Length: 614
Image (cartoon, rainbow, N blue to C red; front, top):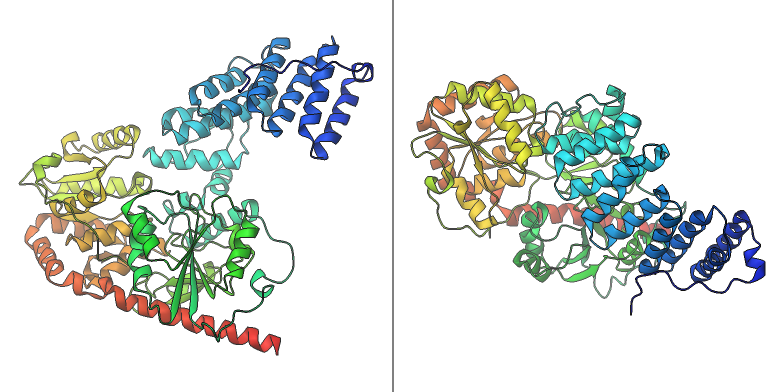
């Protein structure tokens, strides 16, 4: 039975009762260092029972941390509550109590507990108030309570400006809400701190300057990605495979997104089409287990599946090395939930970045990046730590087995039957004030047209409507689409006349989906991999004239197309007749091209190892 109150204190030996708090902490600390948290907790219990010291609350707090380290959360909570009974408002106990409540899923209770630190305890030490504010903001953001999260971040930054982690979340949460500018002044945060604090993902949506993206990646890697100890790479520390028994190239895919995610949706057919006579396909993943059809399809296409959930990074890399992987393909980069430290151990002789991060990761363990000459032109190479593996036509592998829902009608989604419908189904964090202002000018120049958008949250919707009103565009000209299942999401592309791409964070999977469904997309290409993705797809599908290189050109062409729907109809006819037979969707050929590159790199690595052993 789980106890909900503090355990009865042990009888304190006279020697324990006579200890000063400092001596008590030293003895308990030694026990914890020796791996005996339960013994340390018992020592605190005996001292608290025997003393009348005004510092009993400190001992109770330490007692609680020892119990928590021993896995006794209920008893730890009772110890923290006892500390608060001796010293109401004692911040360290409130902070740890909130973490226990969070672990139990009691989000509102944790928030209320932490609020006692930053609201009811204004005299609490600065570090304690920041801890409570920042953890509350994190929980609010996770719960998609964005305005509350932002307000807490502002309070934190007003207390201490130089918190780059908080700046990072502040910038990105404003992007998610279409709250422009993203770097709205707060406290004493300087423009330089805003720049340094902006995450790589956020920077990809704010600037097409490749130097800034490289800076963001390098800062993250320097601060967040642990380096393995010096020594030979793990792949060189294991015995070589018996190639006489099976000389096939072993390709391992590393990801936590092998399910209904943009990466999982694009790669399923890549896994299925690998030539099993020459390649063996492994997956090393920590994707949450589910019965999603996409998850099951991917697992069926994998020859060997190794779960890395709960496995530390060094062990994960050792498993990759022991599997004899020739080419390890990282499908996640520095995106949410990634495990980039695995790559630093170099479990495979060839390690390649693909799809998950459309740009440089600055990871020392990643040697190559799959690309094409459009998304990674020569002038971009100085800003990429990876060397390019150039595919002849388009960087993106796709999936020709997408399930499409029943054909909808415009009225189902609140769209006028006789209007020219522009749309953008990209995530709201990709929207910028500059691009949204351009869209409003396009609507103003094309009478009766509407813009069909996703609204990721209510605040983003309200902010977009306010920006439209400020630009003189009536609210009914913006139509917001709900989230729907993937088949219905694909089907509704047929209701739009023209997709308007975002910049500098282009559409990737979304652009592929639009073209697969026969809907043209207008894009603007910039100087970075991610700002050239849709342009690459349009060249491969045979519509390079829908690629522009500047905002004025983008705006002019969008207006021209909106005023000449017959021209857009011709694009739709072209896509209906030729898109699915174009190089963009020639998936078997793209897979052969990827395999040719992997085989060359793998055989070169094998030869180098054989030479080193000779």
